[in-house]
Length: 564
Image 1: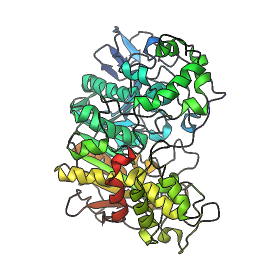
Image 2: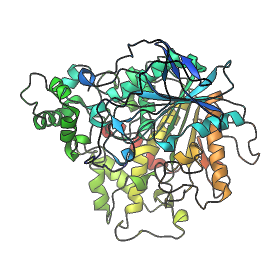
Image 3: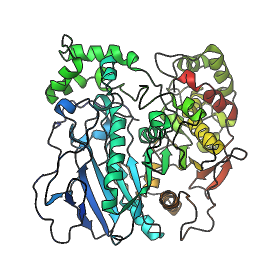
Image 4: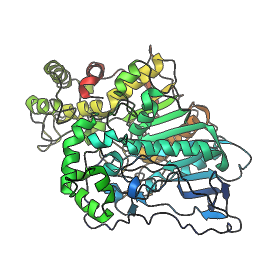
């Protein structure tokens, strides 16, 4: 979830991302997998003693008549072995995460990293779904290198393998309107993820995966995606995974869930702009456009953004808050958490008065929906009370008792940041864990509280480098661990090994070599809700999950007003 960025000059290929289809015998010593449709050979990495299988299609290329359509299963077979030795291109997106990565419409590929030497053992699998606000990002992003997670799993005697999957983004993945809904082709980016999980159920054993032990994992929009998979089809359990990890995202959406009717004016305007307004089928007309023509139309602020997961009565049957309330979700253990200062990534600036904050509260859910006056009044009362724990960043973090970070922020900015962090992620995280506990399903909740190099606060996304144990800062403009003490690398080690232990055991505790000073991560309970606080300034510890109780409850009790 970052600011939009326009692809004005980036050359994007419409159909050239597929790996070479030349059929030949695998090179000597290359790892080979024999899948349902045919064989692939990958690459062995001797430095980490791992096998990489990269750029394997899990669906047909979503081009031509399959553009803006539900993903279709791979329908080709072959003899010999195809190369799976290079990442495929990223899906077409319209944000800064695309910078430096080639893109294509033909992008429905996945990657598998497995430890070598376990050919006769079935291993649990971790499946990564990337974030990026549903309009940018990709499985090839170097920040999401899964090698270090797999390496750590071997080190602690709990070996796993890992996969990363792509899905269509922005208008290509979430186009919506009456005609789209009538064709049953809404939320196709989420359906891409589902297709990848189904493909792994069919083919995962060939890699050595135990397909009954898959855990899905995501951050931000990726974590929201995990949440949507937990509630898909009104909570139907298709046995695609046995655990889930959500970093700053939940089964209760961070944004309003609109309907196809609310998207219809935008869909109609897109059709007109693309010259499809007079067509019998706007959707068919858009599919027939050359990619470069369509991209020129989409590549404006009006049409390349604002397409998101939506209520369709099918994949997203109801609001997540309603489904969780009546138990309509996949009952599997979870890790679910957020960062201390999430709100600094989402609060507006210039909050100079309670009236400024009230203006934003009245459009919190979206520009189309407003909260009721009594809810707005309650939120204003609580979040501007001046209580220390209703100010983000905290006074302790800032090092002084200040009410303003400067004139650009405004004296009520920190109250606004506390509210927006709670509204977007933290209230939904707490409600999710409460409901898991009430249903006697294990939930492990966390609060990340360390500031990496390059950041001033414990903002959104800051935990990712720690979880992936990315100690050299691969893919980052600034290495998150540069000039930091050993406490930061030790925290990353603790988090990474806790994550892979959860994948292996459905419990993040009890791995070999764990520092005896580190506490056990408590299971969330109704009577004594606790978070693990991952901190580098002090030893990580468990805390009662009771702070900002009144404000968070007020948000959660009114989730339907937030349209989620």
